[in-house]
Image 1 (cartoon, rainbow, N blue to C red):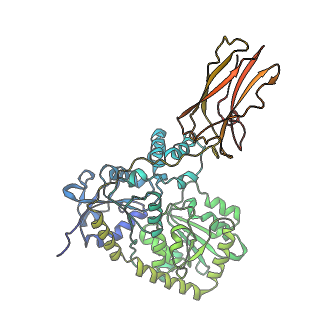
Image 2 (cartoon, one colour):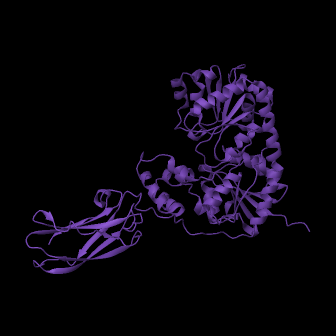
Image 3 (cartoon, rainbow, N blue to C red):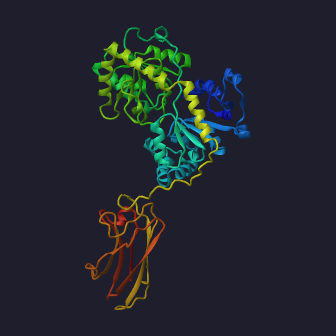
Length: 530
């Protein structure tokens, strides 16, 4: 019995949108259409090439998922996916997660629209108290860095709404399972067709763009951001091992990168050629023009790079970062460089060895091409997508609650906002009268305060009774918190004291074992004349 033909509504940027995911979709669609009843969903504000619109049915977003059709969303980490994010939240389906980190997209959807409140709400929903705390510096211009954008992926709210998740690497799938154990996720190959540009196309490209005909040429491809490590490549280019080697940058450059300025400072400006965005046909010719291709990524948003697979499909030796998803690639098909300290030195050494050995270049290129043909065949990739969609078709969204990570504790937390009240010390308090007081300690910080028995992070109250310039309670044991106190909770300490004669001052000061006193860490203290 033949399985029912699946009906899919495909939701993605499409050519001519300047997006790697648009190019990926153009390659995948013919093979997907051979295996399912396929419709395309028009993304508001995005054009669709006439040849694509003429080949497959194109419907408006409100029609997606009608008549039991399955939405298949393509989700990336840039502005072209803002509307797709909202559509996938509204009507769940199967979602191909091209980037496991969506924090940059969140910034586009909220901060770039001057909506800090929405940014903070989503980080709170996706990452609990950690996300809320990390959001705060973004309230002020310039008061933040990039670390949180990679450490906090900002995708939980979206993923738990879907029937299933697809990734393009086992590394990304395992990463998601470890983060959200209940998630239904499968790894499927990214389909990349065999390249068509040949050596002659590369020579023509070099002539057309004024690139040196005989000098070794490195190529870095696609949208250039700091994670592409192009700055490290320029630093490597300035080392004596790479004297005479040129670099071609084929792709739009993020405004924050000042590659031309860096090249001038490094003394290699005449050997760095920044070409900007290239149409797809030119993009392949640019790859063919390079002797060695570069696909460095650190840190990573978890993406499987289509540009990497395209360089390999054209039989080009490629250098990658020995990190995360790139570490899955066999050593026989790419050259790996560890990111971090000394990266430019190691990179220069390995690139110099490559460009000096034509036989090694040819061996690596042939192995890379065989790898793509074997593991990234577009027809096999489309079959894997459709098979996974069949398995996910009848699943229901998880709709898990917002993230609730374990609270930090007073071992490491540095702010101890709270309250202290002392009841029963009100005047008049006659000299010599003994009273039973109540001390109320309330935790209003984000951290769990640990019990006083803990040698590190334990919390205890020091009570001081000051009269005639001395503390009458110096030998009295501190009042240790008898149990861990969660944020928002309180504890009452009983305290019996006799009022000494003369002017007297009562002080209650909490302490954190292993740290300074509470007041120095933003915590409360209490004192009054009695």
